[in-house]
Image (cartoon, rainbow, N blue to C red):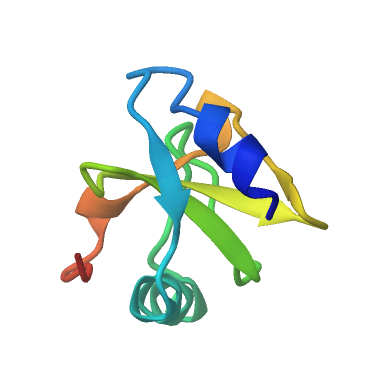
Length: 88
């Protein structure tokens, strides 16, 4: 992802800066998705693993990246509090 774009993106709800998911964070969310235990903020089940994603700096909200395009829609965000453990 372009560093300049990443520098200006923020969570549309909290306005918190976002950063790319680390490998450990991506692996953790994808393991939970495979287990069928992940929903979006709107309550829709997440059935497809993430190839990449952005996470707010506080580590509470994830936004997926599809085809190098960040999907910054509040209803499609994934809250990390639904995961038993989520790496920092």
